[in-house]
Image (cartoon, rainbow, N blue to C red):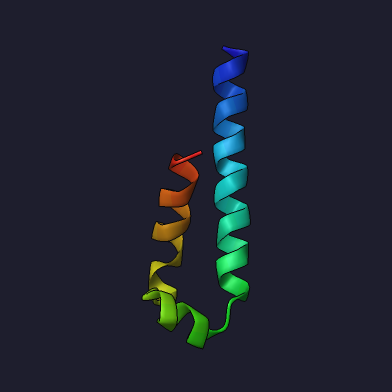
Length: 51
């Protein structure tokens, strides 16, 4: 049970860090990557699931 909680916390932390990092990126950098500001949460969520 503790392992599951630790894993969920790690995924949440990865989501928050990715979202913050993407949020700081300039629009031009996001555009080069093919990401719009509206898609940031989706991309952060997807990245957190891969950890």
